[in-house]
Length: 322
Image (cartoon, rainbow, N blue to C red; front, side):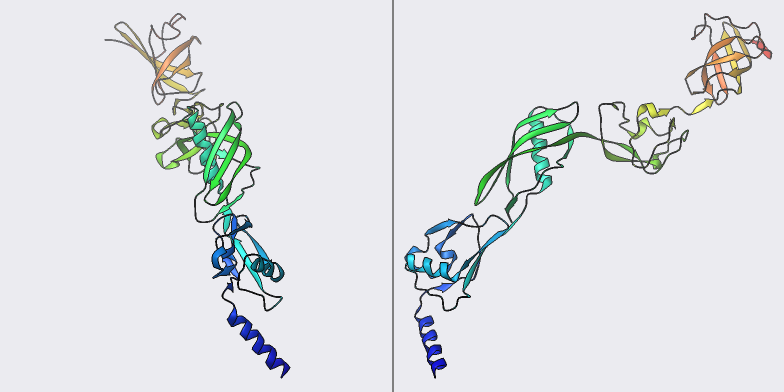
C-alpha cells in the first residue's frame, strides 16, 4: 500500500508540473538560456543563465542545480529522481589547416607577392570551431623572411555564436610552380621523351631558378645526371644529344673561299648539334674549333672560334675546288 501511495503521489506531482526537463540540448552559441533546460519554462524562458560549453564540448547539469534554477526563475518543475540531469552540447570541429593556409596565402598576396605558396604549419594546434558554418579568418602582423621562407603572424578566428579568438601562428611558406617532372627514374645520358614527363606542382627554391618550365625545353634533350621519380628538371641538367663523342674519329669539313677540305679528325670534346667542340688534326696534331653539324660530323670555318690558331695545310684525305 505504501508503494502504491508513493506512486500515486509521484504521478500527481508530475502531472501538476507545467514545465518539462530537456535531458539533451544542442546549443548554437556560447551561452545557455533557461529555455535550453526546460520546455514551457514560463515568462523567464529567454533568461540568460551564463556561458555554456565551448564548440565540441558539453556540460551536465545535475538534479540539485536544476531544482535551484527552477526555484529561482519560477519554473514549474521539480526533480522526481536524483538521476535527473540535463546535457548541454555545442557541436564543433577542429579548424581546418587548409583554411588557415589559405588565409596566410591571402595575406602574402596582399603584400604584392603573387607567388603560389605551399604553407606548412608544423606547430599549429587547431582550435575547435562550431560545426556547420565556415569560420572567418584574418591574418595580420605578418612577418615573412623570403631568404628562408619562415613567417610569423597573428590569426583572428570568428564564427557565429562564438567569442572571437586570437593566436600567434608561424611556419614556412615555400614558393611553388607548375613544371614538368619525371614520371619514373631517368638514367644519365638518357634522351628525354614526352612520355617520361608530366606537369606537376613543385617547389621553387632560390638555388634552382633555372628550372625547366615547359615540355618543349626538355623533350629530345639528353640528361647530364640521373633524375629520380617525381623530380623537377633544371636546364643545367640537360644538354643537346651528343652527335660527336670525345675520343672518336669523326669527319670534318673546312670551308675557305672556293675551297672545301674534308678529312678525318679526332674529337677532343663531346658535343651536340650546333655546339662548338675542339678537334685535333690526325697528321699535324694541331687543335681547331669546329661546329657539330651531324652525327660524327663537324664544320671548321676560318671565321669561326679558334680561327686565329694555325690551320693544317692538309687533312690527309681530299681537297676539292668549288
